[in-house]
Image 1 (spheres, one colour):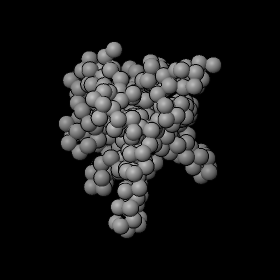
Image 2 (cartoon, rainbow, N blue to C red):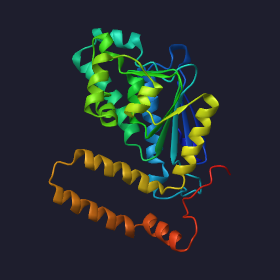
Image 3 (cartoon, one colour):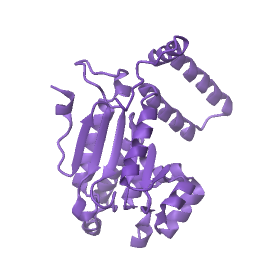
Length: 288
């Protein structure tokens, strides 16, 4: 079975795999790509598929059958808006759910956010229109975010009498304590200039054409990086975030990590390529 034939079936997503680039588009245009249980599950499924079939996970650029494996994921929204947050009718109905049922829903949301945040592929978000509530959570989980000028981001939960709790760990890590606390209490929409200033996004694009151009520039950069090392860079960051031991043990950990990577498959290929004045095997010209 071909790799593309193993991609999970989706009703609320458009999915396109082109060589090593997987493009995922939210496709609930009529409700501004609001998250409901079906869309959340489809996103969980496709990001899980990407993690299990990535070049980083396989420690190889191609599958056993010779197919190119995913290295980059692009997440965007069809229509006017990226994601208007959780479907308001679904949220309203939660008042009729038991505590256990609401916790089950929240667990699915966290599974989605963690699956994006920890994905071994390099993830790029293309944002236009609004990214509210859960949409802001999606933004926070991505590795590189490009927003079109005029877009708005908000942790708007407090306006509905709830909290940005499930998205909180991911937004907090992206923004830091002070900005997370301020925006969680205000619940107001911030523009692209402020989002760039506080680190919610990484670039501003002037229009949709510029959004695509900027995205291709980032892809060209990331395809010169070793795919498994990209996954390990994420794990290294998580280790630093979660470290509770003393500084000496952290230094010992980094020394061991460096030694392992140097002697590993990618480390030896990268060092050898540098000495031999050639591109490493993972180096791809995105313009080809």
